[in-house]
Length: 205
Image (cartoon, rainbow, N blue to C red):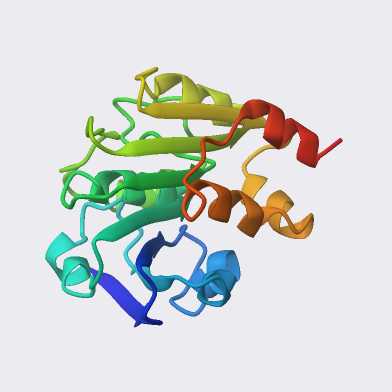
Protein backbone atom coordinates (compact mmCIF):
# COMPACT_ATOMS: atom_id res chain seq x y z
CA UNK A 1 0.00 0.00 0.00
CA UNK A 2 1.14 3.51 -0.75
CA UNK A 3 -0.07 6.95 0.16
CA UNK A 4 0.34 9.33 -2.75
CA UNK A 5 0.32 13.12 -2.85
CA UNK A 6 0.75 14.95 -6.15
CA UNK A 7 1.41 18.53 -7.16
CA UNK A 8 1.00 19.60 -10.78
CA UNK A 9 2.70 22.92 -11.60
CA UNK A 10 2.51 22.79 -15.37
CA UNK A 11 6.20 21.91 -15.65
CA UNK A 12 7.52 19.63 -18.39
CA UNK A 13 9.42 17.70 -15.71
CA UNK A 14 7.87 15.32 -13.19
CA UNK A 15 9.73 13.88 -10.22
CA UNK A 16 8.36 10.90 -8.33
CA UNK A 17 9.78 11.17 -4.81
CA UNK A 18 9.80 7.93 -2.80
CA UNK A 19 10.03 8.18 0.98
CA UNK A 20 12.44 6.46 3.33
CA UNK A 21 11.20 4.37 6.25
CA UNK A 22 11.16 7.20 8.78
CA UNK A 23 8.55 9.36 7.09
CA UNK A 24 4.84 9.96 7.14
CA UNK A 25 3.32 11.33 3.95
CA UNK A 26 3.94 14.79 5.34
CA UNK A 27 7.41 13.57 6.26
CA UNK A 28 8.29 12.89 2.64
CA UNK A 29 8.35 16.66 2.41
CA UNK A 30 11.11 16.76 5.00
CA UNK A 31 13.41 14.93 2.59
CA UNK A 32 12.58 16.63 -0.70
CA UNK A 33 9.89 19.19 0.12
CA UNK A 34 11.39 22.04 -1.88
CA UNK A 35 11.08 20.18 -5.16
CA UNK A 36 7.86 22.13 -5.54
CA UNK A 37 9.89 25.36 -5.64
CA UNK A 38 12.16 24.19 -8.47
CA UNK A 39 9.66 24.01 -11.34
CA UNK A 40 8.79 20.32 -11.14
CA UNK A 41 5.55 18.45 -11.00
CA UNK A 42 5.97 16.27 -7.91
CA UNK A 43 4.44 12.95 -6.93
CA UNK A 44 5.32 12.02 -3.34
CA UNK A 45 4.95 8.31 -2.58
CA UNK A 46 4.90 6.87 0.94
CA UNK A 47 5.53 3.12 1.22
CA UNK A 48 3.40 3.07 4.34
CA UNK A 49 4.06 -0.56 5.32
CA UNK A 50 7.83 -0.11 4.77
CA UNK A 51 7.73 -2.95 2.27
CA UNK A 52 10.64 -2.13 -0.04
CA UNK A 53 8.19 -1.90 -2.95
CA UNK A 54 6.63 -5.30 -2.22
CA UNK A 55 3.27 -3.79 -1.21
CA UNK A 56 3.19 -0.94 -3.73
CA UNK A 57 0.87 -1.01 -6.73
CA UNK A 58 2.72 0.88 -9.52
CA UNK A 59 -0.56 1.57 -11.35
CA UNK A 60 -1.67 3.81 -8.47
CA UNK A 61 1.39 5.97 -9.07
CA UNK A 62 1.26 5.91 -12.86
CA UNK A 63 -2.20 7.44 -12.99
CA UNK A 64 -0.79 10.65 -11.47
CA UNK A 65 1.81 11.13 -14.24
CA UNK A 66 0.96 13.84 -16.81
CA UNK A 67 4.27 14.45 -18.62
CA UNK A 68 6.64 12.56 -20.88
CA UNK A 69 9.74 13.57 -18.91
CA UNK A 70 9.67 11.59 -15.67
CA UNK A 71 12.34 11.05 -13.04
CA UNK A 72 12.41 9.04 -9.81
CA UNK A 73 14.12 10.08 -6.61
CA UNK A 74 14.59 8.49 -3.20
CA UNK A 75 16.66 8.15 -0.08
CA UNK A 76 17.51 4.76 1.52
CA UNK A 77 14.41 2.56 1.04
CA UNK A 78 13.18 5.33 -1.23
CA UNK A 79 16.18 4.81 -3.49
CA UNK A 80 15.29 1.13 -3.72
CA UNK A 81 11.65 1.96 -4.52
CA UNK A 82 12.63 4.54 -7.13
CA UNK A 83 14.85 1.96 -8.81
CA UNK A 84 12.14 -0.69 -8.82
CA UNK A 85 9.51 1.70 -10.16
CA UNK A 86 11.71 2.22 -13.22
CA UNK A 87 11.08 -1.43 -14.09
CA UNK A 88 7.35 -0.66 -14.21
CA UNK A 89 7.33 2.64 -16.10
CA UNK A 90 9.53 4.48 -18.59
CA UNK A 91 11.64 6.59 -16.24
CA UNK A 92 14.33 8.80 -17.77
CA UNK A 93 16.56 9.02 -14.71
CA UNK A 94 16.77 7.66 -11.18
CA UNK A 95 18.66 9.47 -8.42
CA UNK A 96 19.18 7.55 -5.20
CA UNK A 97 20.84 8.69 -1.98
CA UNK A 98 22.18 6.05 0.45
CA UNK A 99 20.70 3.25 -1.71
CA UNK A 100 19.78 0.00 -0.02
CA UNK A 101 20.32 -2.77 -2.55
CA UNK A 102 18.18 -5.25 -0.59
CA UNK A 103 16.77 -6.09 2.83
CA UNK A 104 16.21 -9.75 2.00
CA UNK A 105 18.30 -11.61 4.62
CA UNK A 106 19.21 -14.29 2.10
CA UNK A 107 20.92 -11.61 -0.01
CA UNK A 108 22.28 -9.26 2.68
CA UNK A 109 22.63 -11.42 5.82
CA UNK A 110 25.00 -8.80 7.28
CA UNK A 111 22.38 -6.03 7.14
CA UNK A 112 20.98 -5.73 10.68
CA UNK A 113 19.56 -2.20 10.64
CA UNK A 114 16.17 -2.96 9.07
CA UNK A 115 15.48 -6.40 10.57
CA UNK A 116 12.13 -5.42 12.09
CA UNK A 117 10.89 -4.07 8.76
CA UNK A 118 12.25 -7.02 6.75
CA UNK A 119 10.57 -9.55 9.04
CA UNK A 120 7.17 -8.04 8.21
CA UNK A 121 7.62 -8.67 4.48
CA UNK A 122 5.78 -11.95 3.95
CA UNK A 123 7.05 -12.52 0.42
CA UNK A 124 9.89 -10.77 -1.37
CA UNK A 125 8.47 -10.09 -4.82
CA UNK A 126 11.33 -7.62 -5.22
CA UNK A 127 14.24 -9.12 -3.25
CA UNK A 128 16.94 -6.93 -4.80
CA UNK A 129 17.39 -3.98 -7.12
CA UNK A 130 16.77 -4.56 -10.82
CA UNK A 131 17.88 -2.25 -13.60
CA UNK A 132 16.59 -1.29 -17.03
CA UNK A 133 19.12 -0.56 -19.82
CA UNK A 134 17.31 2.54 -21.13
CA UNK A 135 17.12 4.31 -17.75
CA UNK A 136 20.03 6.34 -16.41
CA UNK A 137 20.87 5.81 -12.73
CA UNK A 138 22.97 7.80 -10.30
CA UNK A 139 23.53 6.60 -6.73
CA UNK A 140 25.27 8.63 -4.04
CA UNK A 141 26.43 6.82 -0.94
CA UNK A 142 28.37 7.60 2.21
CA UNK A 143 31.83 6.09 2.57
CA UNK A 144 31.27 4.24 5.87
CA UNK A 145 30.19 0.75 6.86
CA UNK A 146 27.19 -0.95 5.30
CA UNK A 147 26.71 1.88 2.81
CA UNK A 148 29.63 0.76 0.67
CA UNK A 149 28.55 -2.89 0.90
CA UNK A 150 25.21 -2.01 -0.66
CA UNK A 151 26.95 0.04 -3.36
CA UNK A 152 29.27 -2.85 -4.16
CA UNK A 153 26.22 -5.01 -4.96
CA UNK A 154 24.95 -2.51 -7.53
CA UNK A 155 26.38 -3.55 -10.92
CA UNK A 156 28.94 -1.45 -12.77
CA UNK A 157 26.83 -1.01 -15.89
CA UNK A 158 27.46 1.85 -18.31
CA UNK A 159 24.09 3.45 -17.43
CA UNK A 160 24.77 3.31 -13.67
CA UNK A 161 26.84 6.06 -12.05
CA UNK A 162 28.01 5.18 -8.51
CA UNK A 163 29.43 7.99 -6.39
CA UNK A 164 30.73 8.04 -2.83
CA UNK A 165 30.96 11.05 -0.56
CA UNK A 166 31.89 11.65 3.06
CA UNK A 167 29.44 10.28 5.60
CA UNK A 168 27.29 7.31 6.40
CA UNK A 169 23.55 6.83 5.86
CA UNK A 170 22.89 10.55 6.18
CA UNK A 171 24.28 11.76 2.85
CA UNK A 172 21.01 13.42 1.73
CA UNK A 173 20.85 15.29 5.04
CA UNK A 174 24.44 16.47 4.62
CA UNK A 175 23.66 17.83 1.16
CA UNK A 176 20.56 19.55 2.52
CA UNK A 177 22.39 21.10 5.48
CA UNK A 178 25.08 22.47 3.16
CA UNK A 179 22.41 23.89 0.80
CA UNK A 180 23.63 21.68 -2.04
CA UNK A 181 20.82 19.13 -2.25
CA UNK A 182 18.74 20.84 -4.91
CA UNK A 183 21.80 21.92 -6.88
CA UNK A 184 22.66 18.22 -7.22
CA UNK A 185 19.08 17.27 -8.11
CA UNK A 186 18.69 20.07 -10.68
CA UNK A 187 22.08 19.38 -12.25
CA UNK A 188 21.09 15.79 -12.93
CA UNK A 189 17.43 16.19 -13.83
CA UNK A 190 16.84 19.66 -15.21
CA UNK A 191 20.29 20.49 -16.62
CA UNK A 192 20.64 16.90 -17.88
CA UNK A 193 24.29 16.62 -16.85
CA UNK A 194 26.32 13.78 -15.44
CA UNK A 195 27.15 14.18 -11.75
CA UNK A 196 30.90 13.78 -11.49
CA UNK A 197 32.76 12.50 -8.43
CA UNK A 198 34.96 15.60 -8.57
CA UNK A 199 31.86 17.81 -8.36
CA UNK A 200 30.66 16.07 -5.19
CA UNK A 201 34.14 16.29 -3.69
CA UNK A 202 34.19 20.02 -4.32
CA UNK A 203 31.00 20.56 -2.33
CA UNK A 204 32.62 19.53 0.95
CA UNK A 205 36.11 21.02 0.64
